[in-house]
Length: 266
Ligand code: SAH
Image 1 (tube, protein in one colour):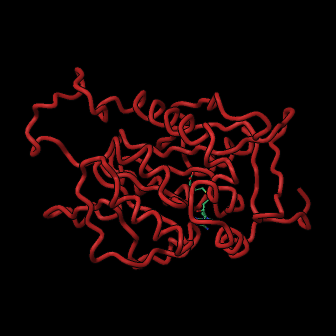
Image 2: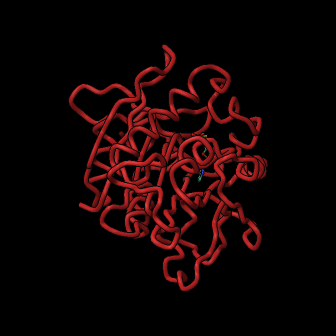
């Protein structure tokens, strides 16, 4: 790329999303009512369960359902660029106890909050005390701003776990960050992982490449689409290693291939 090539503008990206309806069609570019949401969320759950089988909600050698609640540690996820809370309600809340959502677009947040409340996951939802969300991925360094939370139940003495997560899920939103912002964001995410089993999952569109990394600018929402190698370079620069990578099969024709990467500290 030359220095005059366009790069994503965060505010322009957020302004674009603010014009979209606060529903599945809005966050999925018109693919909200077909098979895509179901295929996508099943693929995501499967991917996560393969990596963290202890999250399974059916009895297995990894999880005895008769374990008293005190022995079951709460598992916490962060849904980055959460939109209307689709990933939260369809992928994360069925598998983890608490989800924190990062989403800058107010109508999306409101929709996500009501979806969280309506969730049939049997989880208690408590969003009192946490209102406004940070204003986008790149602003997270200005910490001290409260995060918006769905399903978050503070535990006694978990203050210093305040910003630690077992799973950090980033889907269809990282294109809003240019490379150095993305590296920084992933470094901060890496430091926010709770322990050695914790994971960052990136699920994004992938564009074609030959042997060189490729990054394509999309004017409509001021975002980048990256090729596989472009993502891998960013992950390396952020000090992350790839634990698992997988193409999401079964999505409608004509879309970019979608790929999932599970990442841990290198
Ligand atoms: N991940 C969701 C939503 C995808 S739509 C899903 O898969 O259903 C992309 C989302 O990224 C929108 O909700 C948009 O508001 C959000 N987004 C855009 N710029 C962002 C930024 N700088 N920080 C965080 N989220 C952002």
